[in-house]
Image (cartoon, rainbow, N blue to C red; front, side, top):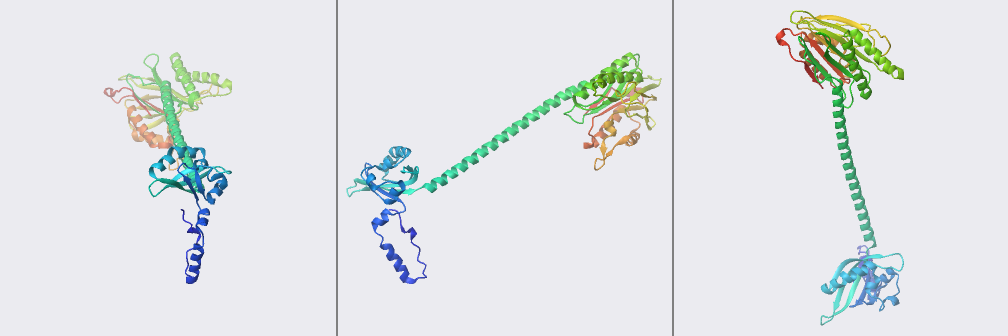
Length: 448
């Protein structure tokens, strides 16, 4: 039997012994039948075959049944849901016969209205004096609140597991997307590197009586640069060289660079005069791009060098279209620009004027060509200042005299010192006469 004293307050001691005695007297006046029928839990007794012999009002009220329709007419299993009946036949009844008692078994009972009633059932077999089983006493506790709580816990657990699974899936998808993006960037960088190399020579040729060195810095590995250079033989012992910078970035700049290089090579073989070569390039670019309303242009400096050998002078003739002036480091420690005033951007207007200059290189002299990525590098704490030609002249004067290899190495270190202030592609090309014939070295190439 379940306990029924939960509704009686504890004695407080404030009413004295008389009030305490009155409370216990009222409690003792409850009859056993009243305690059974009105207990806060369900009671029923069944025969060994499950036929209900006795059931209290509490359980009848829970199920919405009449005593006359239950006692002696139904079995305990008849009060259960379909699933409860199956469990009763396969587990509950066999275990009860073997063990003699069961405690806290979760079942669902059928109510006349309102759906199933979740309950916790305990049962014990009452035996006779000879040990024979007589009847089964069953206690039923309403587990609706507990079932609701368990369902809520289960729902929240499932929600948490779904959220965790979704987070793991999202994390895995993000990892896969990141790996794919990195792979795509790597493939793009490789493809761009191959294409970029196709726009400039893999290496410079060895020029008798001269040293040469080159460096190319790409500001953005995921974009094609627009700087270009070349060194190649023309008629006689003369060598042509050029260096320049096309407008823009990406595929359009690459197309313009390719057209510029091959046009200059063809023009130099037809007429090696520097101004004539740049005039030809200007006409080609103007005709090719101006007609469609999308003009494209470049700056370029083109030169012809005639090595003098062991005893003769080495002459250099230059032509420039809007390009920064060449820089010469002399063997006596001086550094000077070779101005080419009056030259306009190549490809902007037909018949653009071309600036020219000429110089003689003595043993130990070096001429350096560069693009404006060097002079327009941003310096200072706030990256608000441009490096400029004056600083470049001072830098060259500090390093003169220097061979082409030494100049390019020093300038490469200068570019690295700019850090994130170097935000444009930069090409460097140096040609020089060895101080002594024994110091002639092959061409040196640097890329970054």
